[in-house]
Image (cartoon, rainbow, N blue to C red; front, side):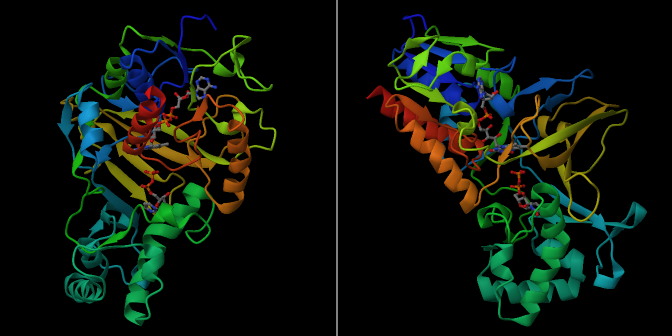
Length: 399
Ligand code: FAD
Ligand code: UDP
């Protein structure tokens, strides 16, 4: 690499963009290599043909309890207040005693996370209220209880509610999303959507929640707009970065400055210990000539349908576009590494973590190589967590 750069960052998503910005403000000249033809990583958004602001890689809602992270991003964007709400949509099954409001086509809707309102939809107002009081007596008001924890209850009635929620919210959705049951996947995954003993029907309870006013992409563009940052889009970093020898090389020359890699750890090392498993997604976008498709931002199809969820973007963006709306359906599948396929979710389990640890150990051989981000760290991070980690790493690199 030309000697003009002090640091190399691979990837222009949250991990890469925040690191690049911080290093640049610290006086370092930073080269950012991004294989896609745009910045923003999986948070990238753009206007579709009808003017709806869509999220190309699935719906992204910003939420955090970290004032520092929120304040940091506020340097690069203003915000639109948006509280995400999700409904479960499932076939009504009278044999299971569903008493909720029947909607067109015999289907049944209730809030997710499953809460006191969902309980009343499922069991009817009186029985639902009684069961809600019982759950509150056992766990506490406004408490969140994971489905796996609830299923451990020794009270038969609470266990029966747990079984209901397991069957109607978790097991089929989780099978679609992961190809495995809730017991087989990392417990932290279903713990993201606990049963909530509350009337609060928002998907997240974080203190700061919203959407970048003009979208995520302009926020990333502002972050990367610094005289010390050069971004090369459409550039495969693995063609430039060489970690096959004793010394890290960039463009064939030894490079001693910090290299922050935010791509897949297995790819960086030629998958020499075998591929790390991921889940991939297919996104099916549809533009419809109608004002609205569904009542809330996302509807989860928790029991049937081949897709996991449908998101309608106008709820999130607040755009006033009468007569047109765009939705996206998400289909989950195993990542095969085929060209054009994107790994979205690490499949976290002890075996895969052990494989990841082998790649991590390779990184230790290079004192100036850092793995950062959802792919590189093989973790289920939300956006705010990545910002927090990128701020911490760049502060360390600037010491
Ligand atoms: P990424 O965004 O994946 O960025 C990595 C970048 O590196 C990519 O642009 C990639 O092209 C590039 N790259 C990789 N390898 C190379 C290479 N060899 N050469 C050049 N470039 C390379 N989080 C939330 O907080 N709220 C949400 O609502 C939310 N919704 C989500 C929905 C979906 C469907 C998914 C999959 C994730 C969601 N997330 C959400 C998580 C969020 O996407 C991540 O936290 C965030 O994008 C991670 O940023 P990152 O920089 O680590 O990775
Ligand atoms: N989940 C579920 N039913 C739902 C919502 C979530 O079974 O209606 C489970 C599922 O295993 C999912 C996990 O909880 O993968 C985490 O859900 P979240 O909405 O946080 O997933 P993400 O938005 O990250 O895809």
